[in-house]
Length: 251
Image 1: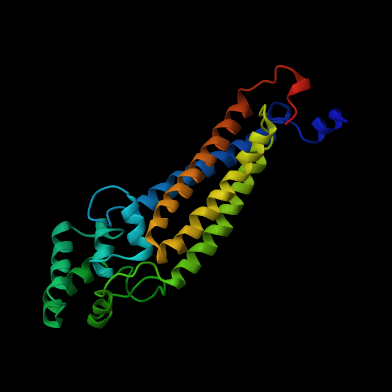
Image 2: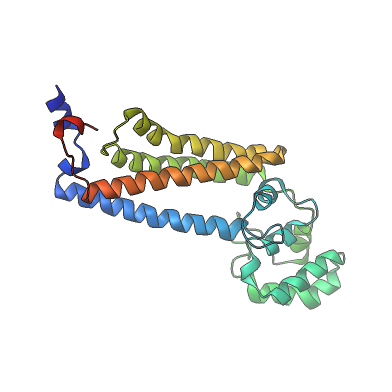
């Protein structure tokens, strides 16, 4: 019975060369993608609180809004901070703080938007605010209430489907690993899915109760640790691990 089980579901050292290469390539690409995902999260959310780096306060502002800034100011301090020079950002923020007058818009703000922003914010993408007219920009100069319900729905379903497939692949590969305590292996397979649930559900909860921003951090950190553990164990055992005794290396 044990012999049949080992033949039907081998450890990494028993896999054919082609399958080991396939798993390695999948892990390398997923690892690279995860790194870029972390960079993207940092770029989108960091600096919203006016300070460098990514903080719980940045996450709170992203999902529940700012108590002091308008949507336009929050974007200029956060995800759009690198899209235009600091002097031009200061001019736009000063215009907002001065009441957002139409004559000052044409003189100061509109030329900046035309040079820096209309390549993307031209109304062609319904998911990106349009900045082609005074009224559209003025509408963004309202108190920031955080991510809208429509955006939360869209981002949540994309992440739920995408992350599920990613961790299904990494979990399937990791299931070939030898882990002495089988219950620990099961926990390692299940943990990223628990983290996905915590992370995405806390987006919604942060919208109504800001302390849940800490849960976003916890869920994201747990997801990253789970991915790193599965990735490094799988890569090591694919090419360097040799089972010392066939009788104890059943996955």
